[in-house]
Image (cartoon, rainbow, N blue to C red; front, side, top):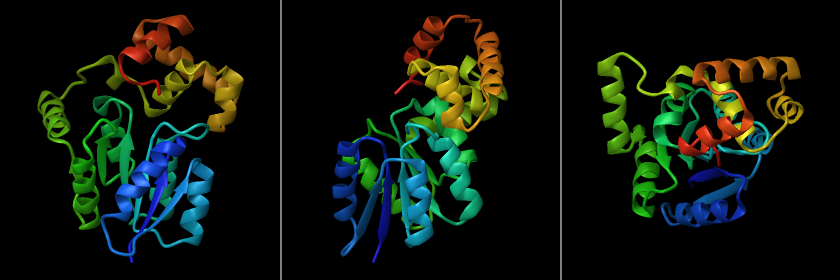
Amino acid sequence: MTAFLVVDDHELMRKGVGQLLLGLRPGATVFEVGKADDALAALHTQRIDLVVLDLGLQGRSGIDLLAEVHRQWPTQLVLVLSGFAESSWARRALAAGARGFISKTSAAEELRGAVLHVLDGGRYVSASLAQGLAADLAAGVARTPLELLSTRELEVLRQVARGSSLKEIASNLHLSEKTVGTYRARLATKLSLSTNVELTRFALEHGIAD
């Protein structure tokens, strides 16, 4: 029997993905959680064949969760199903241990194919993403300002765009306010932007905010 874990902070998305997964394998079981800590608890108590993970979680980020899952369970299969722009997050997710990356804008049939491909031991990225990654590799340089940001800086940018204060971001990421302030200053310098309004506009334009 195949067991899935859907990690998404939107209940309707969890339910919809869960129904799709139930139809893929006879007798499949789907566990649903909305927070990173609940996902880790489920993995400690349940045998999960595939985690379907959203990166835009409230609090602890999906990237952080992905890295922790990969550290504790190196062979755990994780497919990222994200509302974020592929070019901004896919490479980071794959580097953190994901076996595939697919956009929430994809058709249901593509999601089915991605899930089955990963379950069968493969890796999955969309054709457009594969072309983009190949182009980046061939060029050997970053194509956009987003590539200049570290994963932590990108996460701070996402939370700034949500309207979170430095204190809230520090709590969500388990960092000190001073450290968060340093990350914010670095990303502002790299992007040549100064105010939260400018950073938020940039995040929205580049598919960073959720």
